[in-house]
Length: 276
Image (cartoon, rainbow, N blue to C red):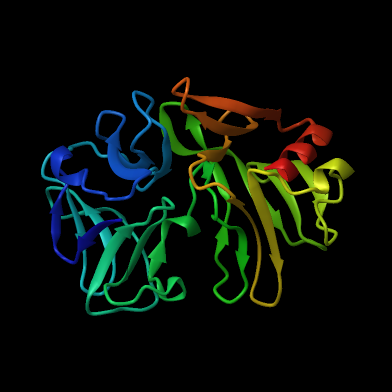
């Protein structure tokens, strides 16, 4: 894990690459205008999985500071001490730190508390366009917080785009895609075994991953976990309206496009969402 304590942290290239996560690292990208999380051992491919300041790119990249305040707020500040981006929390602790976990989840927490339920903030609750293993999509009924995917505007602009992917609670929970506020596609409600529109053969678990669906008084959520920790897999909601699943192939040093699904193809979308 990469750990940042409640002190000023200059965002210089050499200093910021201090994550001890074997898979992920925090990194500048797009001419140092954005700070995000990407795979550290996949080179020369730059695969960004999460972006902090996606709605407010830096205009001046010198003298930028990442600061963990004593109250438990992680903030990106410019040379005028203006906040470019920051986390939020309803609680405060005296010894707060930010850590990049091996899962790719950036968390703010008490330095002496490893319980995930006590994290002050975590990036898995605020995804960009990528769903990683063990990341939950859905809604927490206690806090009202919803975790959903939102596309990049285009391949070179992480600003939120037109499409979003949600777990909808109108009636029985269902997985759907919106284009702005308009319904674009859906996979049918959850029936206890899977999305109701999914083909029967896909009701079986994969040898690569398992899936989890939770629906109780506290939350509704959907996630997947890898059965082999050496496998790298990610789901991406693309800017042009596709859901794509990638698997990293070390032999070819490239991402294998496992599924490439157009959102307005309802039957195929159902198949894709269940498989992923």
